[in-house]
Each structure stands twice: as structure tokens, then as C-alpha cells.
Image 1 (cartoon, rainbow, N blue to C red):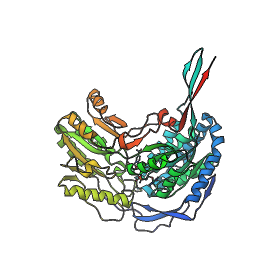
Image 2 (cartoon, helix red, strand yellow):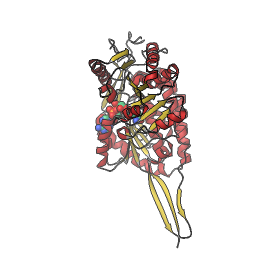
Image 3 (spheres, rainbow, N blue to C red):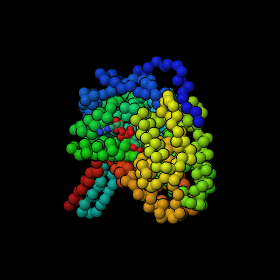
Image 4 (cartoon, protein in one colour):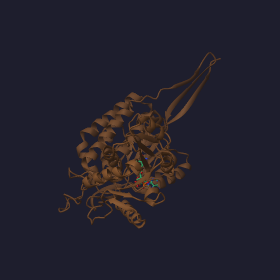
Length: 483
Ligand code: NAD
């Protein structure tokens, strides 16, 4: 394992070439945010931060732009979204480098995040939302239409800021809404740069991008000029969003945290499966809502799977994401780093066995090695909580019904997976998981055409697919008496 930074030794000038996007203008503000490179633990950029005044102006601009934007056809809106994805691809390398500097993930994964966001955007605007005829006879005609809601407030987290903005952003715009978008204060920069591209393409006021702290998010959820909040973040904040949105009865989509189980049956090829499970657990250093966060292995494959996973952990290169050989970057911020370090310490106290990792290297940077833990109780914090970092427990089972019961014994319900050579049995077991998405022999596969979202406390509503798009619209029945 290596850590540190290729840039650590030299000082780099502070980047300040960032603006908010309000009413078609790129603007500065009285307040600012300092942004830390997590591979170095030092501030490398400063951007403007919006206060109440900027929020009010952005909401007014979005409201003002709404009538003309909703009047455009799906085809016109789709064409502008496609121009956006084209511009994202053209600027991919530059955006990816910025994303790696602020978020920490390896450069190839930043490129993949932007690429995936562009592909999903293109996919979404290929979905049609037709008028649905419910009844049509001699007496009556009843149809179900969908119309845009108005202004959508989009609030995003720091683990995949570009991709998690593009999903709701394109859903909202394509369906005829206007937008106020707020990235996490930990990772505002790539989103602000995407704002510059949006400004080249969309009419003034249709999209507004405001960097800002948690209080700006709270103000958005309470704002009477915003009709829907699409929120991606933690369960705790999601609950606050729902409470705040209740005052104005805003529509809400909540994409929240997860504690995804992977159930590995005894018939698998341990080595082959370990490679995939390791990646699905540790990609982005475990900071993925739908990362595998608990591995349940059948006793007949348990030892082999543990050994194969340890092998993967030892091979994985941890380091600065700008180094092309890096596979796992740092934890994104100090708050999350302290949380994961606390979890490692708590897990040590339980007497659990550390098969790999577990040591906390000295700084600079928020680096932690991929850590695998066994012999740990089901009621331990590591098994119960969302770790959102590079530490994963491996738990043994002998009876698959018991594994399903333990996998479901949580308030989380984002996703989960079953791994077996018997696809039919795997599918039956997957269907018993209380989650939004249950995969068989894969984990983390999503698409613009497949609804994604959480069961239980992992969320409310779905993104993507016609189901997701319709959540940015109000269903309206038109019922006609023919005589
Ligand atoms: P967070 O909840 O702390 O913050 C998310 C966003 O909400 C930030 O922009 C923040 O400024 C804003 N915010 C904070 N307080 C607010 C309030 N009171 N009202 C409105 N907005 C407020 O989450 P995070 O730590 O940035 O992200 C990590 C979490 O996100 C994890 O739990 C992860 O699983 C989850 N996540 C879920 C999905 C999904 O699709 N289900 C995807 C990615 C991440």
C-alpha cells in the first residue's frame, strides 16, 4: 500500500475560477467556501457560496423561466440535453481532473463518472411520457396526462457529485421543470464547472447552480418558490428534508444511505466472485450508497472467499487519485475519515478479527487501507451502521433462510445481491431481499431505463426510467363526458 501525493511536496496556487450560475449570469458572492483536496488534506480552491439573497434570486429566475420552458416540446428539451452530454464528453478530462482533486477518487473513475452521467442523460431523454388513455367509449373519454411541477431544488452529496446531479437535473429539465441545483460544500467545484456548460446551452434561469453549506440546503427545502426537492444524501438529513418540505407540501424524492448485503452461496468460484465483490465493496473507497457493506458467505465457501478477498485487498493500490496507478483514493473529508476511524477503533474493541487493513496510516491526506473484518457480531456497529468507507465485515452462515433474515434485519433497504451458479435459485433468494434493487451475480449495475431507489429508510421514490421521470410531473386526469 502507498499513500501520499505526487503534489505533496510543492505548493500549488489557490484556484478561484468558479462562479455561481443565477438567471443566466456567472456571478460571485459575499461568502465563499474553501475546498480541500482529500489526498493532501489542504485547501486547493475557493468558490463563491450562496446566501439567502442568491437563493431568492435563483428561485425567482427559475420561476420566471418556467412558463416558456414548459411550453417547449419534449423533442426540443431532449435536443438541449443531448448538447449537454456532448459538451460533458468534450470537457471530460478537465472536469475529471477537478473532480479527482476535490473528491479524491482515481482519475479513471472520475472520467467514468462523467461518461456515465452523459450516457444516462442521453438514455433518459429517449424515454417517452405519453398521454395514457384510461377509457374511451361512446359515453366518455378519460385520459391521464403528466405536466411539470415547476421549480425543482436538487441537493447532492460528495461521493459522486457530477453523476448524482445529472440524474435529477436531466429528469427535471426533460420533463419541463426549471432547476436550482446545490452540490455538497465538500465537492462544489465540478458541479459549478458543469454550471458553466449549462449556461452555454439552456435559456437564462432554466438552471441555476448555487454552491453553499447545509443551511442553504435547509433554506431550499423550506422555500415557498420551490415545488419539489430531489435530495441525495444521508438518512438523517433526508428525514429533515421531509419534515421541512411538509410545510409547503413539496414533492420529494429521497435517495438515501444503504447497508447493502451480498449473500454468497456455497457453489460459487470464490476467486472469480471475490474480484467482483471486492470492487463493489471498495470502489470509491467504499463511499458509494449502493456499495456492498456486509458480506454473508456460506460456511462451505467462507474460508476460500475470505482468502480471495484478502488477496484483492493486498493488491489494491491506495494513493492520490491523480497517480494513474492508484486504485483506491482517500476518504473524501475529515468528518467522514474521523467517523470511519472511530468505527475501526470500535470494531477492534469488540475483539473482531482483522484479516486485512485496520491500521490508520499517518497523514497527510485522509487515507485508509481496504479493511476486512470477520468474527464480528450481528449487533456490532460495523454490521448495523452504514460505514461509507473502506471497511467491510464478512459474516458466516449455514442456512440461506437465516442469511436472508440477517440481511433484512436492518432499517436500510437500498440494494443487495446474491451470488451463485444457480441463477434460478439466486433469483428466488434475491426476490426475498427487502430492497429497491436486488442483483444476482452483479452489484451496482444501473441504467437510465431501470428505476433506482431505496426501500425502508434508504429512500422514497425512484430515479431514472419512466417511473422516475413521472415523479418530476403531476399526474392530471382529463375526463370528458361525450353526451
Ligand atoms: P448529507 O446528508 O450530509 O448531505 C447531502 C447534502 O444535503 C449536502 O449538499 C448538504 O449540504 C445538504 N444538507 C445538509 N443538511 C441539510 C438540511 N438540513 N436540509 C437540506 N439539505 C441539507 O450526506 P453526505 O454525507 O453528503 O453524503 C453521504 C450519504 O449520501 C450517504 O449516506 C450515502 O449513502 C448517501 N447517498 C445516497 C445515494 C442514493 O442514490 N441513494 C447516492 C449517493 C449517496
